[in-house]
Length: 456
Ligand code: ATP
Ligand code: MN
Image (cartoon, rainbow, N blue to C red):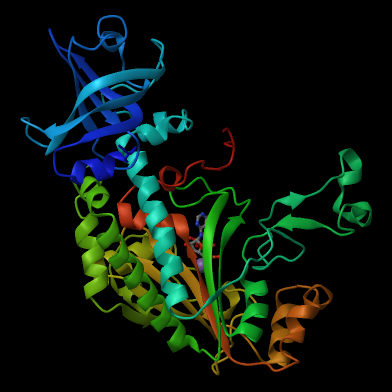
């Protein structure tokens, strides 16, 4: 006899004695029988346990079982007469390990995702958040599988950094100083002897890796103190950042496409039940969307072409469309959802709206940037070919008011064996949002951090 996961039991043939551990999803106490659905988080479906009066603790314990209680069950795996399940467990022993009070907040009815966020310590017991966490896990595995299969080296880049990778300044400061002495000007006395921050991107360090190991990727937490309360922004999120030496923009676009296709295919293969749950309960098109991504080639256009299309669309956008201004979410979604109807890679953005490290095109007005836009989510990937020519990189730093003194090591990479190279950043939660169809990014991460929220 072996303790088994519910997911595995549900696929087994009837027969034999099994032990399961889990929590009561629902308990229905009929006259001479109790029907207890037990879940251990291994699948959307729980397993039905049938308890009868021959159990010693039937009257005083089994009859009192409620949703949420923790259980250990031993019983026979039998063919289920009910529909919707192949097998069920005829209990020989039911032991309540941890009971619940009247105030257990999760009941059989559907709860809103907003409500569930207030009980983040329990919400993973729901069907939807459980499915999200399993898909999240599978996506993480799929990402590693893809890069490992392509010969990339995973590089662990620092969480604490002194440089502002984007030059955008939306960073959380890290300090051991308190009160007035916490002034950044007094940072010489601080732990690192200089101002330090939580990283917004591992890219610059990944470039160091690529300049030695050729193909690297990072997969780690990133932090942005941007005060944007949207359904697509978190203050703490996970980012995957491949960086490849001897790669140009075209190669980078091809890498992003192959990568997304591979991960989506992997999810359909490994998370079929959970994906079916999302298609049924959350977003009708969830599975179709993934199949579509795998099948169709991504569309590609330049920023300049995108602006022309938006201008000619006749749409009344909230934010005006103008060459030189960044594309807003509404523009991105129009392009990918309505204009092309599939993933779209927009390249060659104006130099003024992109970071200093992107390769300057010969027109000197645009840089070799690429954003991958997908239906429902908008931007899922942002990347570029990097500027590897020292004099131009120096000019770009000055242009953006960034001190060369802080980027000396980054500039050094251009002094010693510099090569064209490229990479991108994929927001992990945006990927999970895209795959599951979940509307709010806060509901695809176990413990969301947003302005004003850091409980749990
Ligand atoms: P956006 O324009 O959507 O705010 P960005 O241009 O600031 O994104 P990048 O700096 O290019 O984003 O970061 C790379 C990727 O990281 C994005 O394509 C996105 O998938 C993800 N990302 C960026 N900011 C956030 C955030 N606050 N929360 C979750 N994911 C994010
Ligand atoms: Mn971006």
